[in-house]
Length: 173
Image (cartoon, rainbow, N blue to C red; front, side, top):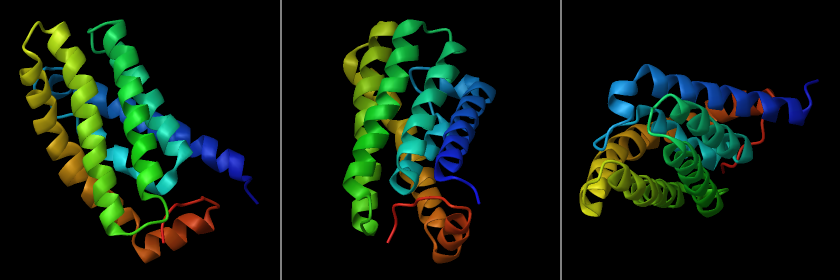
């Protein structure tokens, strides 16, 4: 029998690696003022997996942003944005229905837009509204559309039963 802590640690590591690799491989669209960070589609998974996803996706951003060339502000700011967004969404949506999940997705989009858009506007010496718009548009695609589809696909009855059989703690109804 697998211990819950080893399953959680494995999930944390897997999500961190998946996030970091997706950002680095898709660097041309991941590190601009107007960006579509497709790896952000993983953020809504925090509402299902809780702490392993929160920590893994925050660590993944920290690692990925080392390769972006925007320096310490992006490295720390991106990890912090992912942490605040995923934790907030998890707190709102855990053990709740579809409406709360959609509220969690909207909150993640808002948090990522405000934090990342603010420091990117500073780093690229652009007006704040341009920074927010650039991140908002990409977040609507990555988190809003792709992330919503992913979280609803993973929360289907059959997938949930399979994941629970592996010893995962899930925050779904």
